[in-house]
Length: 209
Image 1 (cartoon, one colour):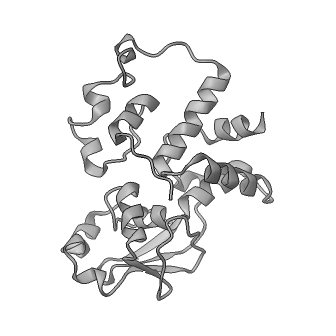
Image 2 (image 1 turned 60 degrees about the horizontal axis):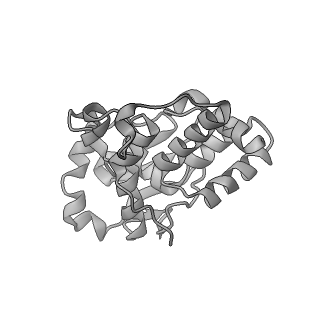
């Protein structure tokens, strides 16, 4: 399995925006964007040069890939799937990204970041409709129930999680039963329900070139 091994904070600095790859740390003064808001590398302190239209589209695509932890091959497949679906390609692409199992686990508050959610899913800590799923890219559907496995609930990782979930900000297209560590997909997310820090239209235009 291909993995990204570069520093998470370097990805944010390269993108010039917070990608929230380290959970709560990204909201503190320790965030790399707060401390060193310039690209990584020996030439980074000189700032960011002028960008072309292509460069801006590429930057938006890279942001999305880093936020969701997706490599190019899989991301381009999502684009093909979105454009081959009836309706708004921009919204369909966002839904494909948001309805990945690791993203839903993060949105439900079961993990502090998508990176952590991906690892927890890979380790088999979640079940979908009662069946263990360890594929982060698994696409959940409306009506699916996602819960922490019985075995995982006894581990230190999920200790006191039900108490923390009471403060979680859950999207309206998802429902959460904190006491049971279970969530449910109520609907496909609407555009206004998907909070993103990248321009999805620019990404579609990038692949349409």
